[in-house]
Length: 255
Image 1 (cartoon, rainbow, N blue to C red):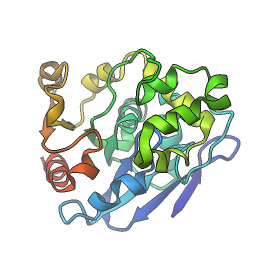
Image 2: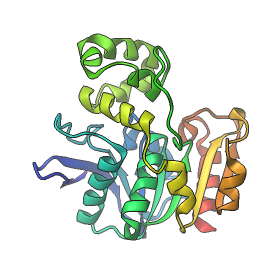
Image 3: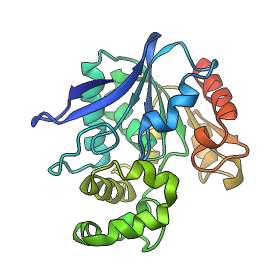
Image 4: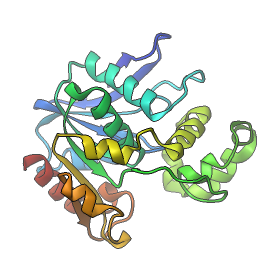
């Protein structure tokens, strides 16, 4: 495990690092998750192994510190991640990023372009979503005020999330989880989708085949984003169908 201070107060991001060749490959988890738990299997798949790989936990999640004075916006997550990658000596990395982590990766590439050479987005959030009480994911968490969430709303989220997601969500700071969800649901200005369209690096978007066509896929493809549907999986593509994920990610990074 490695770590780096990423805020003026000394809060640290931590990651599990696998040795290998450069350029580095960085794996970024989604909301309430942790990269080692979600990406370890595919990171050592023969199709993806051999690169220096950083399975990194965003601030407030997993192995990393959980400051309560951090705003956990997508921009702040991206800037903190940039600090960690810089401290690790990473430049021109290949990012494989899931869900909220994909949104952070797009913002990172837009704000710190020297750090990112390629993007593989795994069912990432591209657009704002309205808060919806009782919903799964960021929109359901964002429907609570922070006070409501800390006072007991997190228990309702726990019960909706189920055993698998809660096993990593429980590691996140509760302020971090709520603020990350609120800011993810709110999105960025310009939107994450607009930022992605404007990037000039190789970009691939993986989504579950069962979800049907990705909204706006034609515009993404016209801008050079390769959209790939993966069979027999849900939102957690790398866990549900690791073999197909490894094939698709390897092809995206080799193209």
